[in-house]
Image 1 (cartoon, rainbow, N blue to C red):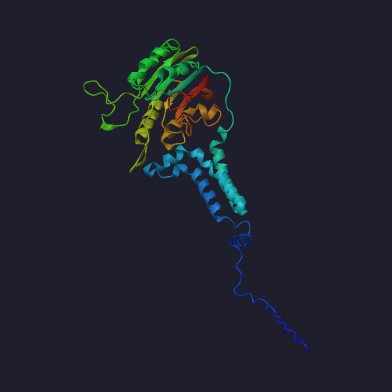
Image 2 (image 1 turned 90 degrees about the horizontal axis):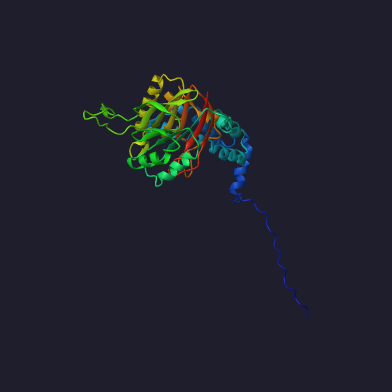
Length: 359
């Protein structure tokens, strides 16, 4: 009896007809499309951003100042260089030649505007050393601040935001090192050298029409002066010194970046400087704005910034905990800027700024 072998079933796999087609990963398809475009067509978003950034830096003065937009951009203009490394990384990631070329515009403009501040322009010497410091009305240790300022060895100290309570402390603490001083409202000047021809300077905002800032019939001013002018007698001749504290700027819920008070003071200060007949002039104070701001065009057309000419770096002075803007200025006319630097932080929210000038 024969055994029947079980039938062996053989199957033949049919070749795949390729339907439905297998989709490749999305990243792979993106790389293929990118490679197909070529280096001059890749990264259009990075290219557009680089061009817009360059145009912003180049034409910032043409920005409309609607709701203070132009002033706000110009206040932090040096920081607009920070997107460049980000855009460069994006251009390399996309291997975009167009983006790399477009980045030349913001880099070139930024270096033109601020490249001079990257080096050390200080020189030795100087005939007069000055310090300007907004000591802050809420300063809890005015005596300590006064001692730190006196230790700087400056010939002239300009203090802003003085109060009735703190003024006496500064007068007491600085009396020995600075025998000559004058206080006009909320600003004051202490000097090792004699002073003369001292008077207040009107940098107040016209809050009450044409008569604002002028004495009332009873003789009381509308508000305390925020500026003064005096003459410092040096061994090489007199120097006119202005100390000012321009109006504050605020971010208003409905009005945007409000600068009208400061801008009015800047215009008045520019007019006072234009009328000043002294050959040598030094302007010190808290401007509540950087010199890139269009509000100060009238001043920068007449005066030079010691920090920009003879400083080392940007010299950011506010806020003291992490400075992002230089709103405390030392401007000169008729003297040679020698050096500019920052002093250590005090009990104020501003860093003191110092400068040496000569002639």
